[in-house]
Image (tube, rainbow, N blue to C red):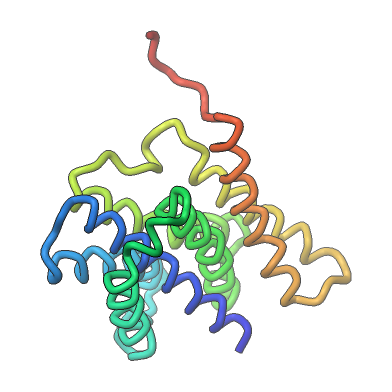
Length: 201
């Protein structure tokens, strides 16, 4: 039950971040919905295809579809209020990657995959919805820039497995690992920490 709540919260956060990007590009309502949808389920869809879980999760559980539709309508109606939040797109995107990292790791563990593969699945789940969103919006995906993005997901994934070795309630392992991703991303942006560039200025 707790795992499902985390999954739904991640879906909401990513759907709203997709709506915000689409509105910045002044897309029509259909475009806004499509961007919200691919942002919310893009990473999870790729993950499910890779692990052979088909039909993919959102096709077999209409809850995801309803949540995305509801989140999209909410974000459109209350777009002015949401935009009052400082850097709201960044905020929802960061919450999304934190929650989805844990979701992807748990999916990998459920079918007995190696921890390294589980961390990779978590990172993919967290990042690739945003990659599709940015490509469709004619932007260079954040994951392909110098920003600390996928790195935060990887560190959160490593934290997850380290915490598994400690006598900690599993729900707290989920929460702490997700928070590690979110905090690292927030600190990286706050203090302008980025990956080294391979290009000369």
